[in-house]
Image 1 (cartoon, rainbow, N blue to C red):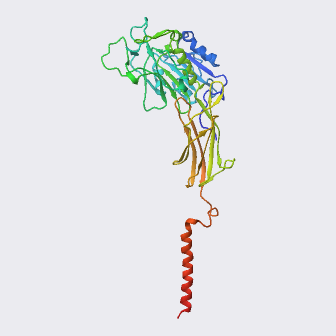
Image 2: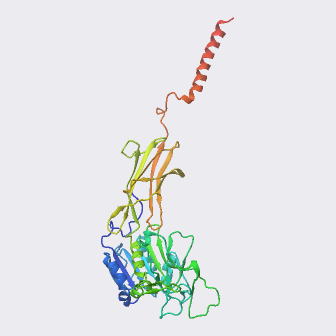
Image 3: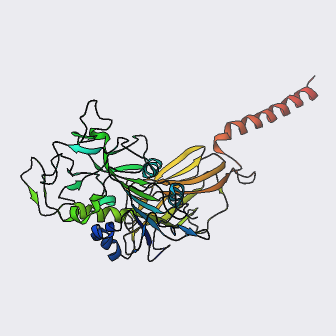
Length: 423
């Protein structure tokens, strides 16, 4: 049994992942070179194109030319060649990954792509995130729009095991995510004192986005395991922000450089499946004491279920160890729910007795954890009742019925003798 999920940018698909980088200005290639170099050093092949290039194409003869897409062209209204917003969304639907960076002059096309991915950007023209209590002290900005953000998602799978100590510099547009959308994760959130507004216009009404509603950087783990990064700041990935010293307002602690470089590199590892990518292999089940997988089970049979789960580390597959992997024996509703035991080497197993109900059941495993690709495994198996020759001949619980039957026969015999021979 194989798992119905995509292996996005896993080593099984491409040993040298290809990334298309679309920019609206060729200067972005040099101004963000540290970020691009970190990707190249990890083995990615980057192809830089202007977003308006008439030769742009994501696929050729039905085959995609790239494994991932980086959109560093926030002001682009119309793409060149055969690329458009629908084509980019189809690219993600195929299981491939996307990084989208915006700024205050974001085009409607980029807003549509972001909205379709679960992020709604502030519609106010030239609005930026402002925070009068959590800004970075800077001589270049007196509007408190250079945010020193340090509210990170608590997930080692997404941001790595090493904590990001320095704040991340953010200057850009705010976006919000629907609380009911469990596919979108706020990776970098604004503080409760932040709000979105145009600094050049006096604020008359309360801002549409403020406080905890504002997300600075979000990620999406799609149902097909494609991953999307949505950032409201293109400058977050720039060399300037990577190397800038940071002093947060109200804090006596200064940092020689911001946490942007570590943040960008760690989040890109997650986006391109270098971390948090799971696969399930050798999924099987059989009767206890046997090795072959049967065509069906009989009610009250004892069976064993097992599988192996591994995680991609960027270099090789390592055993994935967790205590919350569960399997259901399912027919319309779960009849049995078992937590799988593991040996610490990636092998998960359990055993249970088939319920005294016959029909078509499923072994069903749904594993969804923050920062990890989802595993969805299922396989049908019939469960039959006992055949007529498989029941016990004399059941102890039926002894009263046996005795009543023989007593009736004996009584009828006595009645017949008395009736025939007694005058």
